[in-house]
Image (cartoon, protein in one colour):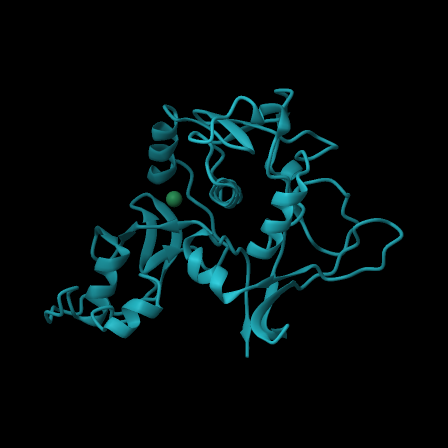
Length: 281
Ligand SMILES: [Zn+2]
């Protein structure tokens, strides 16, 4: 999920961080001092002064000067909750980050970044190269990414362990790019490992009843979360709402994954859940 630290309030005519917005909403500074409640609602935030994309401040209204809340809740952040809207053309934020990215170079197991061009280890018709060990850890850690290859043997020799970015964070970055692309940010160009142009739709496959090729791609969709008992342990079971078929001889089923509380606590920031989740007790 893409988050935004600072957004534009059209009524106040200024940019606000999520923390500042929350303080102005509850009328209390981070040090507990009473301040004017200048924000009365959560629906006046836009991506940028020239962008209509409406954003919501998640966890607004929570008093983080209360230590209990501080320990148990994630600090406020802005996100596009509706998923129905797009960046306006010429959005300042999109232009700025495209410019900033021009100078970046990075190599991960999934891609080599050269500015705004990403050369993926993905190949059309084959997907990402498979890696059993990494796929397994991914299934237990992340919900909407299934059957993703995590290591590219061809490039492995070229990567030093220092340079390699952790798997989950590089996948999360790809998911963020995909979400932004869906919201009218066309700034990233993708090439496959043979340097042929590909699109995000080649890599990201929606789960929605159709037959899924048994290739290593990133599958996504809306999911439901429920508490279940697993070997005497209370765990979250996250299942896709739509069923799918992995190969033509299979019956249709809803892919799911189990999320362990300890994993959540240890990797709180690494989760990249996308879509509508409904927590049911
Ligand atoms: Zn925007």
